[in-house]
Image 1 (cartoon, rainbow, N blue to C red):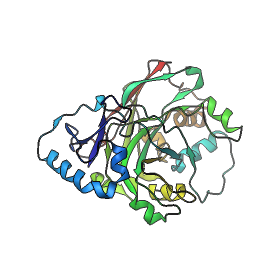
Image 2 (tube, rainbow, N blue to C red):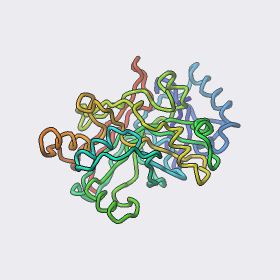
Image 3 (cartoon, rainbow, N blue to C red):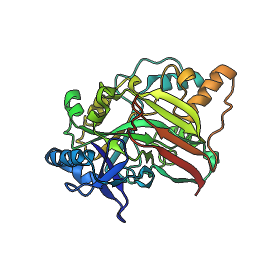
Image 4 (tube, rainbow, N blue to C red):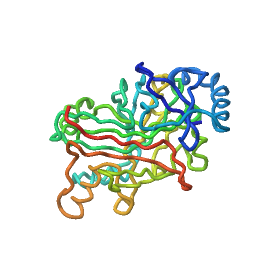
Length: 321
């Protein structure tokens, strides 16, 4: 299934089924919101699937992805990983850090979950001096996960796959990291592409609980990167199990992959400006690409090899708060 949330005057919006080509949509009858669907996923999914099949057979109304809210406009929990080793290895080289023994556990932090920006919108920032950067990621949404779930059990609780823009303020991040506490100012709310999909919609491109597709990123409409999502050291099943080790996860928990990155970043490009700046430092002795300024826009989109859109297009513009 493909699901989206359209505005209806409430904070959580109205759940809709969306056709595979993202051209048509119909309000879901089985659940009013995506959160409600996730809280009774096993019971409601047969009804939602029947509605999705009926929509696929014809009917519904034209769907405008640019008018959608984030699939979950607010969530009970947002956890972000850092599962792409090539990104971390590059940053270690840039900062002259010694090669460390691989951490046997995933890296993860807890971020802002009470709001996710719509896929197409202006995003306010106080100052571009804070180092405004985008981060293209894949993510998943779970139903309720029991504490200490095994990796196999965790995989069974991955209900939806999403595409995320994790906004970061690069100048503020190292300042907060040095305090020994978590990020607050450096990590504003994320943005999310308009459509959430069940893993089966990806077919063979959902492999080992990873998205085996390139994430196409543009900056001011110019190609910036097309890294493939399969290169995660830890799959989403690992990330869910890690998060659930000492606590149960509520239905509607969103978990991100971290910046999508490949070892061939000089060829495929990057999913964030910080990585490109790191490459420039290694190759040219200094970073030459500035971070975003007011008026700049980032775009992100994923398509199947036959051109079928997966999550719909995200396009967000930096504006002065």
